[in-house]
Length: 484
Ligand code: NAD
Ligand code: 6OD
Image 1: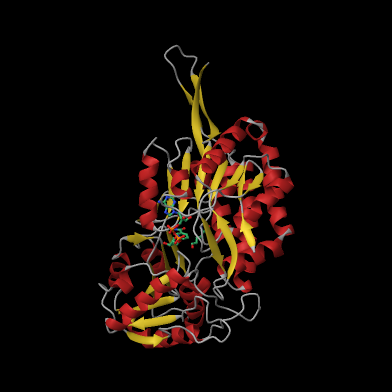
Image 2: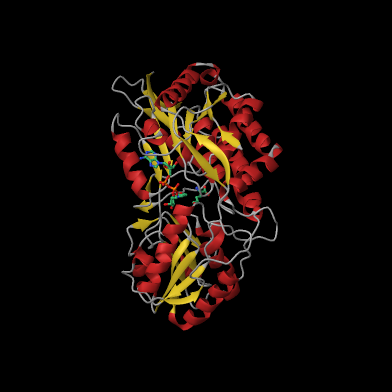
């Protein structure tokens, strides 16, 4: 059985905190043990990260750093199969997803932010002075220091490297706290860090849970200079409170209840393909997923049936088998949460168009399976429509006018993403400008250019990452004013 060890100052060390089991979600079997870092080990990790800022890493030129980032991308690709197996065993997600999304993006994040830092400039202003000689202002970019990176379990390597890569690109050091559900790829990345020559202490990993454990020890640590977090909105509130002490900057990528909007002129087949993925990909465990869809009345029944066909088309099973297209959810607790919404929908009288239960899978009885599910007929006040479920399910509501669709989409405390489906691009542009979200997709979903601003509005987050926006979070500008 694998023991997932912490990675502190370039060494793998057993945790001295609580021990708990790591499960394979496909079968529920125990495949590993996590021994969490205790407070002293979190202190050591932060201390190592601080010391590394003063060592060779802190003195390294930008081109040398860029070279190491590119080697990290190559190092992940060179061990692609190891990362793939680790991610699949931690999450149960099908190979078809992990090999096309999670692992390639894990490598791409390092290349993209290497490119970004290679072309990074700063502002400069020449100013007049009363004596006529003038002065020149220019900004220099400095790393923030030690960054705490707190990660969720749904896209473990992708979301962790999305933050680690720009943090390192800007010259910071990091202490990562992966989700307690998915310790594997963050640990494996420690081996790659050593193999490619990242100095000890630059990348550290501490395992464990959040409240009262490694997560909280890290985010409340006085020697952490910035916190970047992806996860639930409620956890984001706790992290923001922790960051207030010492006035540390935070970047929060939080939950969503993302609306899809389908107009009656949409290309039906392309829409079904795209919105189907938006509802069910990764077993619905994508923060950008579409759990409420507003459909123009004339095509409502056709869309409901089309989406039900998509829901029924998934194949469950061994995630290593290339024919499997849907895995389980991450844990027994998360399945209970998703199924509690399935019960709520039933008790509130939803019309069940597809799914609604647990698939009967011989050989996988201990796994955390749920059926992809489509409902109609609930009022907008239902928790099924207002609360994030984070499962493979969606509810469809009809609308008549564009204004009504926008109002329905905006009737949420969240504001992460939307996808708008129409052949009328003027209308798409108009609607995209009015839906209160950080990311609007038109006739596509989760199509990512990593240079673009990514983040949420309202309760879906604070700040933007991606491209220059990541550089702004992971570095600080210092203005130098030179009297000429
Ligand atoms: P979570 O908030 O439960 O946990 C995320 C991480 O925070 C874990 O590592 C956990 O151990 C840690 N944590 C929990 N409490 C903590 C505390 N008090 N102090 C410090 N650390 C703490 O989220 P999850 O269940 O792992 O992930 C699913 C959620 O993440 C969903 O809400 C989803 O929408 C959101 N998410 C958002 C984005 C985005 O980009 N906006 C991306 C992926 C996931
Ligand atoms: O693509 C990304 O960079 C990103 N942060 C995706 C988030 C997905 C949420 O589950």
